[in-house]
Length: 390
Length: 236
Ligand SMILES: Nc1ncnc2c1ncn2[C@@H]1O[C@H](COP(=O)(O)OP(=O)(O)OP(=O)(O)O)[C@@H](O)[C@H]1O
Ligand SMILES: [Mg+2]
Image (cartoon, rainbow over all chains, first blue to last red; front, side, top):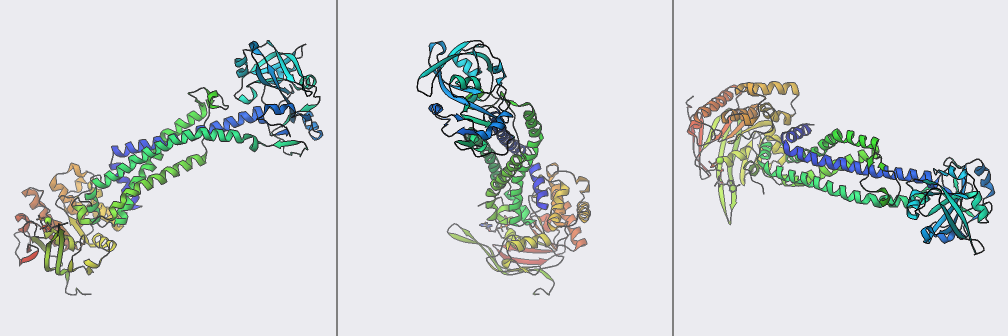
């Protein structure tokens, strides 16, 4: 208690130098929490968007389906399993039929995936209702990226060609009735969505599907022979490792920042122990033990951490909560990140993140403050009083 | 206990040897000195004669190379760091040539410091600090910082700090060296008063004639040896 009081007096008395260190450290502090919060928020946002638009509550895959091999779609389809039919009828699950196809926009060859989906479905956040309108031509829907790459517009007609199960080619003309904007590239790039019933007819695969996407509320997941259930843990693996890689860059940045702040504190400690050897001699003459002196100087150093936490909170809390509320506009085009989020990221700061960072910074500051005090242990009172230090 | 004869301090055949390059230097040579409670004693002698060295050993800031120093029943040469800190904290006050006030503390906080280390309760502490400041005539400057004080005032704060805990012994190394004549007499008078009032034992290391004129015992050192030890009638 006494040491705390003395350390506080000394560090406040040190003035400018203290506040410079505190400013640097609190900046590192706030930046770490901010960046971590951004990546957490990014992760959450991407995950939510991807689940909403792509994964639902998990998916049954036909056993031959391999998302990394478009060729697999030739064989990866089967009759919709009996056990799942009632659920599909109640709109608690939605079947998707996928075939590889080819289009020739502007005369150039392009491989695409043709995807059939129920226009009434509500499970995936894809605006498929436009597909419900039935004219003579087949209604089709693409995302904005696909539209950009192919130059297709609403009401354009395009011929889609695919290989039938007999190995011959078949083709139909579809009309673009809707171009939708999404953050999830996996439902956009090189894909054309059409109503599943039409797709089953034209591909001669009546009642068949490649995958069946479950509603998020479905709790019972029956085992279905010939189909593998992929839960969200499995589906989100790639995404998580991608976000992790992206956040590595941030980690390196704030590690450097933290190191710089620590260097400043270390330097201050070394300097103050050097400058204040006569003062230490006086303190020893007044009856302070070396252990008390080491404790005092260590505390003084680690007070920087405590002050930084307080000062950081002072401007960090309003700043970070403002960003959390209003989002943070990304400086670079979000598509370059390789995954999905909106134009703004809403950082999320967990209690664990804040408490963890605070403890981390306090522990490191204390260690950095303690190291230079080793010199004190070998200090003789008479030498210190003369201003000597060996 | 060994000091039944009311001797506060007794050194016996004290030697202090410092290495000096390949050779050594004998800063104290066979010094035997006894000091009784309430003495107002000065160690005098030319520069390098060993005054500071002896004072530091008595104050348990240093230890002898051989011989023994008994201070308030403690064998200085046998004390651990902790024990000697304890001895200084409990019983010894120091006054330095360069005042050595703690610059970031106020006058009040400087004087309070030894009491904080002793763990004196807050209410009692305030009383003792204010009393000490009154003795040295600085009660009005309690809130000042050392940088706002004159040399004489600074040394008076240092005296208040040394005596606030009413120690048995106050050790003062050249306390007037940085002060003018008026201030020197002023602080010496303050210390004489405290010596009378509190029966505090004062030991000075000095070659200042002004200080010497206040002493009631003058021990002259030369080349680390006691050359003369005389009782005198101080000109007070
Ligand atoms: N730490 C040290 N290392 C080596 N020699 C020392 C040390 N301290 C003191 N000495 C030597 O011991 C001798 C006595 O020194 P001391 O400081 O006790 O003298 P003093 O009487 O106080 O002198 P002054 O009047 O100049 O203060 C001197 O020769 C000095 O050089
Ligand atoms: Mg000296």
